[in-house]
Every structure is written in C-alpha cells, then in structure tokens.
Amino acid sequence: MLFLSQRVQSLALPMTIEMTKKSRALQEAGHDIISLSLGEPDFDTPDFAKAAGMEGIEQNYSHYMPVPGYPDLRQAVCEKFQRDNGLRYRPEEIIVSTGAKQSIANLMMALVNPGDEVIIPAPYWVSYADLAEFVGGTVVSPKAGIEQDFKITAAQLEAAISPRTKLLIFSSPNNPSGAMYSRTELEALATVLRAHPHVWVISDEIYEYIQYGVEHVSIASLEGMWERTATVNGLSKGFAMTGWRLGYMGAPLELAKACEKIQSQITSGASSIAQRAAIAALHAGPQPVQYMIDAFTARRTLLAKALSEADKLVVKAPEGAFYLFVDASAYLSPSNPTALDLCMRLLEGGVAAVPGEAFGLDGYIRFSYAASEEDLRRAAERIVRTLNGLNSAS
Image 1 (cartoon, rainbow, N blue to C red):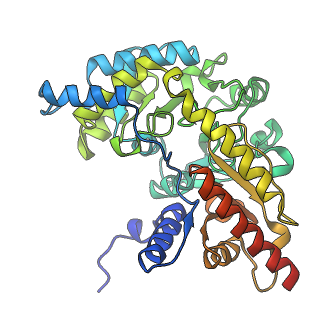
Image 2: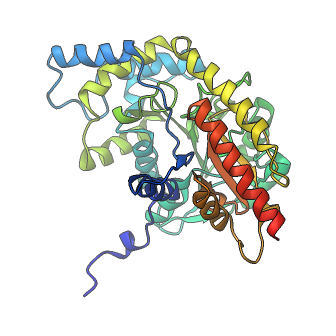
C-alpha cells in the first residue's frame, strides 16, 4: 500500500546533491574522483566569526530564541542592508532563518497559491522550481543561454507575465552561471514589473560578496520595487559558513510577519550560536574575507583557460559566484543525448559535475571552482581528455 503523500512523491532530490552522492560513493569505493559538483566554499569559517560563536556558548546562548532572530542580529541585518545595498528595513521586517533556502521556502509558502504562476528565469538554482511546484505553483521559465549572458530581457519578462502570475524569483549573481544583472538591466525589468503590480519578486543575493569587479545592485533599491520585493541573503557563501545554517530576508512588514508565522510552526528560530557568529560577520562586511575572492578570481582564470583546450566547449568567465556554466551542446550525440549523459561520462573519467537540465537548460554543465588549484588543474585535464575523446569517437 502506497502511504506517502503525492506532495513528497513529486519532490526530487536536487541534482547537485545527487551528483555529490554519486561521487562520494565512488570515492568511498576507492575511485579517484574530483568533485566539482557542490556549491560550497572550500575555506573554513573566518576566525572572528568562530570566536563570536564560541563567545555565545560561553555566554549561555543556549535557550530558545525569538522566532525571527535576536533583536541585535536583526538590527545588524538592517545595518548591512543599508550599508551594502541602500535598502532601509526595520528590525521587524527582518526574518532570520536556518539558511537562505528556508527563507525562500517560507516566502514560497507565504505568497503562492495553487495555480499561481511563478516566473523562474533559466538557468536557475535547482530548488526554485521544486519549491514552487511543492506549494502548488506553476513554473513559467523563460530561458537565457550563453548567447545573452544567461540573463533574460525585459521583453522575455513581459511575455512571461499573465493574470495568474504571482511571483518572479531570480538570483544575481546567478547560480549556476555567475551572471550579474547590471543596474540598467534591472531597471528594464523593473519597468515591466511596474506595469504589473500583482507580481511579487524574490531577489536571491546569497552570492553578493563573490563578484569580480562588477557592481552588485539590489532590485529592491529601484524606484517602486521595495514594496513588492523580498531580498534574501545569508552567510554560507560570502563567509564560508555553510554548516552554520544562517540566512535572512528583508521584506515589507505583512510579508515578513507571514514568514515568521510559517517558521514558528516548522523550525522556530535559527541556531542561537550561529546567530551570535552572524552578528560579527555582518558587522565585519566583505573586507576581511577578500582573500577568498582573490583566490576565486585566480581559480576562475585557471579553470576557464584550461577548459578552453576542449575542442567544442564554449566557456564564458562569470561575473560572480564560483561556477563555470559551460555550453557543451556540441558534444551531444545519439549516444550522449543529454548533458546528464555527458556528466556520467565525466564521472567515469574522474570528475563530478552537474548537468544543465538541473538548472533548466540542457546542453550545459556546471563546474564549481570552489576547490584547490591543484584539483582544478587535474580535473580540467580529465574533462578535456574525456570530452575530446567523445569528439574524436563521434
């Protein structure tokens, strides 16, 4: 007798996690696999954040905390939004969650009714579409390939909006492509959105600090957008604090309170110790972690150059995040009809990567360069050898 709900049966594991599981299983079986599949900085949490967490333990922050976060942390989030993004929030408009993923899930549950349409430009982070469908939404996904720098146009957004549209969700810097919307490009999207006041926006800015000389702009800072935008961020990427599970969002009060209500029923507040560490990180800002950006910059150059040796691979250096999202469509064939098939060939060659269909675009492959330069060199050699081998065999 089938007892599981239709809701959970329709939900898949993110392919990023699936590919990581496959690579770990092979590694445990004794195979030499270099994993470029998971989006996690390979740095340790900075000492100043760890010290603040340990101080929280010593100060006995070990009891239940307010569901939306400690007041001093929410104030620190407000100051960060003002300092870095030009956004004015009050502490009561801030909700601290167990990672930015929970913030996004809370927002999906708070905004989307069954039958509502959710616009998710592709390429998109793997969980957006699954979460939208999990709450009964219908995904509408305009596509933007490498030929348009992985960013949709205002015309594409206009064409995707209908009377049933409830929400637009996107990330900048983007996962998986690293693309960043410029101020001009965001203004063009905002012009469309102003003509459709029924459409809300979730702006996922988790990779904000990982960018390569390009201005980061929050869409909520543009005229008329704050009132209909939830801005999501967190500490996992910029401060290498993935295991601390600390994300946050700023949103108009009614939406923030709705998310607080949802969170109170599911997890209550985020880790008390992680919250104390988060205060130190937010007050510090990006300057103390510039060494991470410098390392990612060097790795970005290294991997992009090394992969250019693959005969038919189209590589574009990203503006942010720590991924190369490469066009491998020229390698598709009757024997390897999808990017997933190509990723399985790469896994046989000793490298784990994530196929583009996980992000809404087939024919592409995502490689994370959150790995050592030595591993990236070895991985690139294997990737080039495997793909050129497919090319010569076809």
